[in-house]
Image (cartoon, rainbow, N blue to C red; front, top):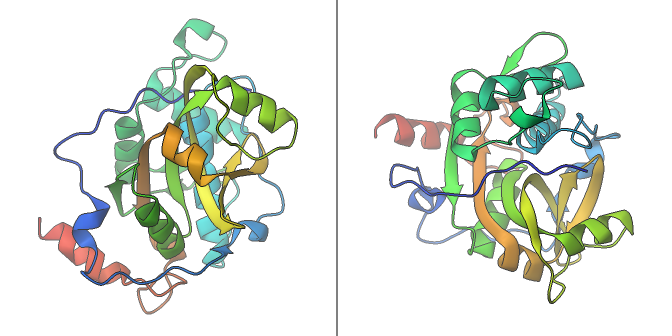
Length: 246
């Protein structure tokens, strides 16, 4: 399995999720998520190429379009084409498989959009940075928008846990192997469930707090209903107007 997220580097120009929150925050449920609406989460070549940031983004659009009752197919060819466009990867040349900076990925998703198997592009209307240390905001954003993008410094112990079918949890003495991007799609039994390498993997709050170095929430119109709200009732139109006024 391959990693592929470059180190996080917050920018002063980043839109912050907390800026758009009301003073009194809505309460997210004890459990939530729509991960079971997807029967198969494809690998998208992330077992041999460091395209995790694009594979994870394709998983997010799969989920959003499914919830929006217009499921879009994604395939390896489209994911690799977008990975090449963003990172400069040349298929067959391992020296160019250097992963992605998430600012580049987010900008590409907003301006160009990801290519699906039918030749259509899927853009996000906006993206906002989450404080990686604020677990409540990460969970709130996941509940509001169906998924959040989580960037982690990946410890070698997590690879062993993945192969053993165990939750990702903190193991003393583990060594960082690189960066990884995964969508957080559910909250169950006190753990965040993330999608990676074709599987849904539980991640403990301790693991998130220890290893998350960046997190993003994307606003996708694909999951918005006729009233301009997400499945959980968040007002998409109000957020878009606020962003346009900046």
